[in-house]
Length: 308
DNA sequence: GCGTCCAGGTCTACC
DNA sequence: GGTAGACCTGGACGC
Image 1 (cartoon, chains in turn purple, green, orange):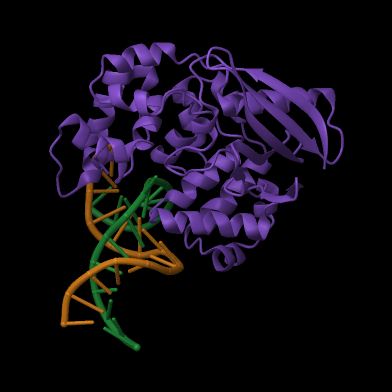
Image 2: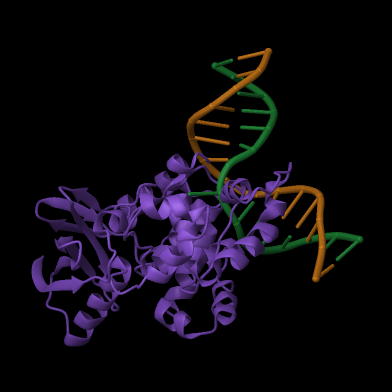
């Protein structure tokens, strides 16, 4: 792979490159197969035509004028249109243009968020690199302990993901929907330990490769219309659709609902799942359009909050 | 060592 | 339209 583009992306301050691409909770930035070393990330995504693209990125600039320097790698030189698409995706995933100052103003008046914005100063949530990557994460998270979700994703990238060599490091991308759509369900189940999720993954892959709105197109829809479309994907229910949607959302599962119930002072019951609608309503009212960012901040700062 | 339980949801059948 | 039951797998736990 050769460098086909160098980008210097100015960020709206406050901005933390490290907290954005290498979050404390340990979740990946673009793919579970990326490498973080010496304050640099080696990662990758797919161009709109599905070509594997390598990315090397590191912080640049100063605290007052933060920026990120990225090198984009590809086997073949991308077209002008593809280059624009790739740089837009990278900037979106880095969240460099997001102005989070209104969120910090809200957070400084909020007893729950006051501490987390200090602990994670400048962190961005970022957007998913593509719809299928987000679907893979949300499906593998369903009904499984986190360690198993990680195993399933690692098996997917090992068996079906594309491999990129960058600076003598091997980066693995999540598989394309076309690759999963053409793989037998039984094989997915056997090789990746997906269990009943293999059916959902294959059907979602088929639906997306047959033509489905992209994240950019879903963003242009109303929040409700985007949710309705996402829930047409087999195996994507309300929780997964809220994880994926590019609109503000507050996806709660049986684990996170207990954390927010504690933070909101709501008494836990024997059936924590039944608290989800109530806790969502409280979060919507309290954090409104910033609720997704509030969720990302809280879930990445559990050790300091003393919950979880 | 073996059996049982259950985990960061969703779909389907049945009422 | 509401809800119980089934669904893969593997680690934790009790015996």
